[in-house]
Image (cartoon, rainbow, N blue to C red; front, side):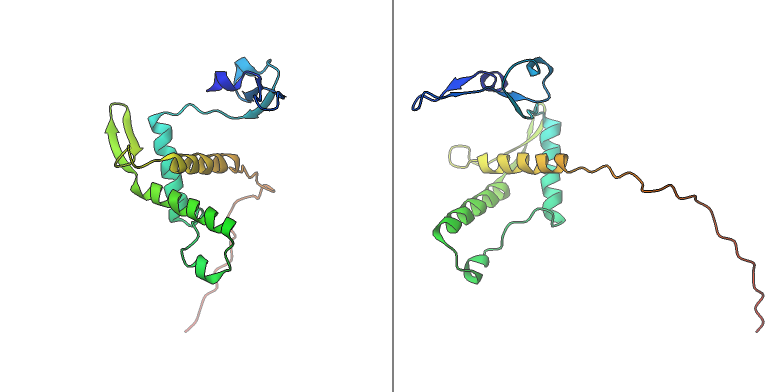
Length: 160
């Protein structure tokens, strides 16, 4: 995939030339002309497990939510919005149907029936969530160094 994107291409309908799309983190592509705009990742079983776990955690903690089905009755939904909602619900159903399968390299998530079920939407959702989480990791530096210690007060003798 990376090599195919690294080549300039011509639109067959218009004849317009488009620059190569290059991985911004690949040392071999740094000197090539083109758009250095993507960040390719090498998927491994561990990374996939981490990405799906991250999405699950984000959903459980309310950081990633799907619109509730009641939204259709609460708002005047236009046809374009209805189509988008159908895609969102199809994504949600794909995620719910995935099953964890043991492989020789670890675990992977697969749909129950590969001939009928897909996981394209689920995979793109997991990748998008992973990108968002990685891009938004903020390293907060302390605003000021505060000396740590204990405030000592003289003991007051209480009389009862």
